[in-house]
Length: 442
Ligand SMILES: NC(=O)c1ccc[n+]([C@@H]2O[C@H](COP(=O)([O-])OP(=O)(O)OC[C@H]3O[C@@H](n4cnc5c(N)ncnc54)[C@H](OP(=O)(O)O)[C@@H]3O)[C@@H](O)[C@H]2O)c1
Image (cartoon, rainbow, N blue to C red; front, side):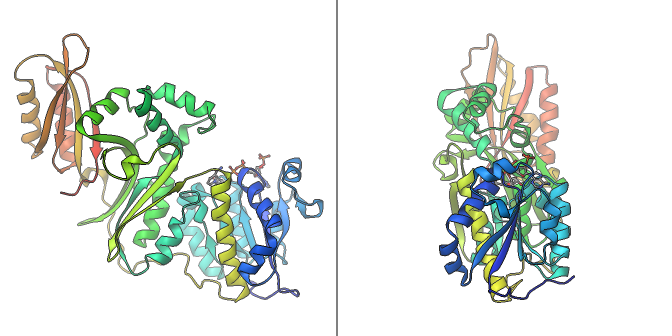
């Protein structure tokens, strides 16, 4: 069925909500309590008419009236009276089926589901286009930061060169605590869990999958071609140590967990990994659970977005903004006024990580003997990897030395080959630590 773009008898735009948990509860409350203000923003009544939730007691605690409640989400996506389905169940199973079915029934979609978008974005957009419905997902990246709207609307005049930043508040909190109190990773993680900043199972965050979902979505919009998750290189923060944070500090850097997408000669690449940033830069000074995303484009130059990256209030703000946008389109029958996804006519190749160029920090643990720096430098130099600085770091490790190497821009494959050779040197006594450095342009 094509989009049911007809006005209801009383001219209202009607919303069905799926999931009334942390975010859904905030959205339901806001829609109910602020309906008059929101209706004025839309230009016609905006009504929450159905709320599907497995745990009805939870929805009641959010003040959802009894007559709106149901446990049957499929009934909501099929309800001919509903214009917009707001999916806040999460996950990629049931949520995907419900969103697909809703679009086939002509409903516009608002969702915060980054995992769903990252995994099935291309297909979801195709179905949305086929059925002439809007698919909005501002809350999927950067919580309350309107980064998707900015990329789609505010930067429409631009050719985007890069989008990168801190998109996972949990990891940023952990790294901030490690730096502030010289904590090891495990200690900072436990603290984040105790504070409610990390999930009971934190793997999605600390292994980098959440950040990968987010940079995949941002890069896809920025570059106009859908970036598959498999093309994004990921390294989590589990192996960042207090020693590396201290060494970076002595070199004038801060370690942050960055999600990076760049358009360069030869193609696009996207990656997620702990990164050294010069301590004076704005991104390096984004602390705690905050997020910040930098966008570089022509003609705009550099812009930086900063704000709360998750949590009920910030995420609710983004979901409501999408609902109002879509409701305006419904009121004016101008669905797809803003194409949800504008595909470029000239997609670029995706570069594998081995072909990415970056600057590097290497921390080598070696015997304390003359000639060690020369031996390591030889391995780097023979692969065209130039050095910007070498620092002998004082560490209480008995007979061993810690030597820090900072490189010029080099190709990842060459650096990995050098690393393997360095680790084989008899003078090197522990696995060398490699971290990438941004900005990597010279
Ligand atoms: N929390 C955040 O800060 C945040 C930030 C940005 C984006 N998001 C995204 O927002 C979405 C929702 O997250 P959340 O934190 O609100 O999750 P949540 O608290 O677990 O809420 C989901 C709710 O949906 C209910 N539900 C599950 N299956 C259902 C079904 N078939 N029909 C009706 N209700 C169903 C769940 O009930 P049961 O618990 O009984 O299963 C739960 O109450 C996710 O996609 C998440 O990635 C969250």
